[in-house]
Length: 372
Ligand SMILES: Nc1ncnc2c1ncn2[C@@H]1O[C@H](COP(=O)(O)OP(=O)(O)OP(=O)(O)O)[C@@H](O)[C@H]1O
Image (cartoon, rainbow, N blue to C red; front, side, top):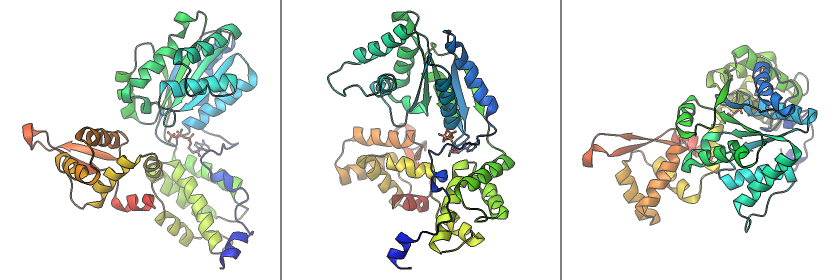
């Protein structure tokens, strides 16, 4: 097909390609009623001027935590003006200032100036507003483990949950969202005792739930008869095995794109096989995009080698190539480990037996796909 034909080809298989976007909010949102009820119960007291509860929202990736919180917040705001609900993605907003700036924006409609305004002024303005208007604050912190570094989490939790000490009558609560049980243990160690939560658990979806969610998505995104039930079933099986609903949604879109590029009217098994072959781990590509140049350079060295480095060897090599200090190397390595891109394993060898081996947590094949 000529390039122009590709660009202008308007016989699409998609009735709504946005139905496969990460931020698409499905109108049919099933299987999460009890979790959403749990959240509503935590917020309800605030509507009558009482104290909202704190929650830990726990469930593995793509179990619908973010969507559920956003849906509940939307419903709350539709029904009352007494509760200010703020959702924050802690992968993006990692500092106390950044987080309170987002709360400020939600209340006043614009961000505070980035420079020249001390934190306390922003904090005071927020809390005085809540006090004067007799409104409560419910703050959802998604992927809150990103605040473990530098103990940011403690400062934020303290400032939010102890606000009533300085601003009497102000009622606040936090929904802490976590996607890994491991983080839950770290969380308990990291967070001050001011936070006493109830738990809301998002269990993984069953195979039939996945199949029904994907079928809904097909109906929302494709024209009728573009994809057969058998292919949806196969995608559901694959998704279930991988344990990540996002993979299924992504596969649907990719299959559609491949079929369209071949001017097919229907998605076939061959299209699905191709789509599976082209999959890159979603989390991996997102994480890689967030790295700075130094972090990426270090990861390149680790991935480009057949051998497994020790931390000592790697630091020498990195110093030679990039001219960075040992402290920078160490910090960079720690960051890669924190992001779960690498594991470091003590070998029992070396000086005082504390030499470490650096082991990537994904294959070089996946890495090269994401690097493109
Ligand atoms: N019950 C459901 N019905 C329809 N779509 C769903 C459902 N649960 C999740 N999804 C879809 O799966 C994707 C992931 O959902 P969401 O972001 O809410 O999960 P999450 O648990 O917050 O994930 P993570 O922990 O990785 O941030 C979204 O595209 C969402 O629309």
